[in-house]
Image (cartoon, rainbow, N blue to C red; front, side, top):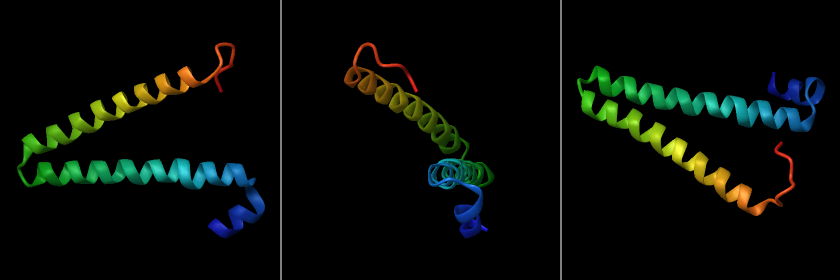
Length: 81
């Protein structure tokens, strides 16, 4: 299926977006959710809450840092993509 999608249905850019971007993010989120669920099932509620809080706070903080660094590197008149 992946090989046929690469050859027929999707441009190389769209293929990379779907396979790496969309599917990669889903598997990353699935792992995060599965680990959190396993902590809850084992009765380790404190670590489960910490896992969620750290992942969300760190994720938002890193996106903010990335946006700040990127905007400082772009010319003032550059349009956002």
